[in-house]
Structure formats: structure tokens, C-alpha cells
Length: 240
Length: 132
Image (tube, rainbow over all chains, first blue to last red; front, side, top):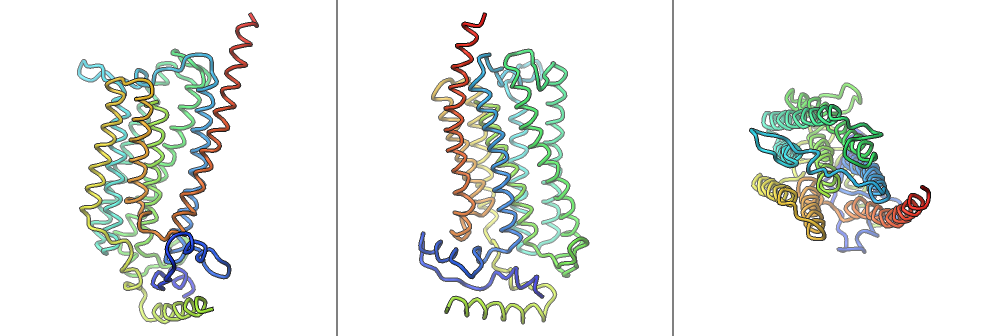
């Protein structure tokens, strides 16, 4: 009973627009995030903390790259591939970007169908998202293998500043780990949706609470965040 | 005062509601309901913007043009993902500001570290020039 009361999204809270409304919402003796289920608010706060983690990684990379006196390897050449006799710069990273963006698109539609209580479409779209995510991780594994074979290490590489390797492995490694965990949780939630847990109010194995389709949106928030981080990594690490 | 009573009323209504049905369908019917077309359009734009940023590299643009284009496409993509895919455009301002303002602090950190790494670079240049 208490659990459902906490996820109440119905109560209207009329407020003045702009800053006055924000101050009114944050004033004492009330919930700050109204009309937002607690799970969603917690996911947002987790994502905020994750933003700082990836922000610090990219900052460390910026500091290393700005302060080194050795030339930085040219990512356009490092990540180029020979496809059918053509030398195409950065092509693998471009494909990875498109794959991840597509997975974000399918996830957004899964959330939409979830709220329409179309459980088959939701589950299928989530599984498509998981497959695209797994493809992304697979391509990243290929990229790592290729670079390691070419002699890139966290402490050295054949083309220039040694910090290139350490930044690359740390940033893409952490991002790839996030994608991997996302894929695992996508499969778990897709299974719950497919089984109809959120239609029949089946209690969760771990929490003994009844879930609902908000879980799909919360999962979606995490997945879009992973895509969002890739946007920044793509811009700063691969293109800069 | 009126605010508190309103919340209590809502709570009571919801409790009563929770008793009668295991799956509170109506409670979440409002959720985030947008036409599928919106997501497809945003998806298309993300593809276009990604292609644009890839072509910045493909045509080997250099200097300030390269950096400003990279940043422009990055910000547009990030904005579309956060606003539409993550539904931030429809959230209450109290949540939006709580989540979107703190990352601005990273920009302060960026400025600090840019000064710091310039200084480190300078000392390295001086040391390597005179050291050997």
C-alpha cells in the first residue's frame, strides 16, 4: 500500500511558472519532485552522479592532451579502416554511433508502447535495443583488439603521446561497461514485460514490490544516458 | 497549509484506489504519451546530425571551423536526446533544474583545468628546452 502511495502521479500541484514555482516546490515539509515517481527521480539523480564521473574522465583526458609536449595521435587515422580496398577515416566509430543512436530510437518507442500497455511491442523493441547494444559492445571489442594488436597500451603507442592509450582505454572501457550492464538489464526488464508482470501486478523477485510500466521508462532513461555520453565521447575523443 | 491538505487528500484518494485494483491502470494512464512520429523525427535528426559531425572529420576541416561545428552538432544531439527521448521537456521545472544545473559546474572545472594544463605545458616546455 505504502509503495503505491509513493508512486502517486495523479495529485495536481498548481504552481506559478518559472523560478517562483521551483522555489515553491523545493520549500520545506513536502516532496521536492512532485508528479515524478520515486524510481524515476532516483534514476535521474544516479545519472547526475554518472555525469560527473564521465565529466571527470573527459576532463582528465583534456588535461593530459593539453599539457603534453608530444604530438597527440590523429584519431581520424588511428580509427580508420580498409573496406573493399578503400581507406575510410573513422568509419568504425561512425557505424558504432549510428548503431547506438538507433538503439536509443527503439528504446524511446519501447517506452511509448509501454505506457500504451502494448506489452508484446514493448518487449520486442526492448530486445531490439539490447541486440543493437550488444552489437555496439561487439564492435568496441573489435576496436580494442585492433588497437592492442597495433601496439597501443595504456603507457605507450606507436604514434605519439603516451596518454592517448590510457585515456582511450579508460573512457571507452567505462562507457562499454555501462552499455554491457544496460544490455543485461534490458533483457531482464524485457522478460518481465513479456511475461506480463506489470499487467498482473506480479511482485518482483528482489523487492517484493509490484512493478509497473514506469520501470520501462526508467530503463529508457539509463539507456539514453549511455547514448548521451557517447555523443560527448564521439565529439571530444574521436573528432577533436 | 492548503498545500499540505491538498497533498493529504491526494494521498488518501490514492490509497483507496490502491486497495481496489492490483494494477492501478488509471493512475499511470497520463504517463508520458507522445505520438510515435515525434520519436521517429528526432531519430532522423540524430542520424542527420551524426552524419554531419562525421563529415566534419571526413572532409578534414581544421581549426576553429572544425571545433565549432563539432561542438554545435554535439550540443544539438545532446539536447534532442535529453529533451525528447528522456522527456526532460515535459518534466516539472523543479526536477529539470535540479538535474540540468549541477553539470554546469563541470564547465567551471574545465576552465580551472585548462589554466592548470597550460601552466603544466609551459613548465614542461621550459624544462625540456633547458634540461638537456
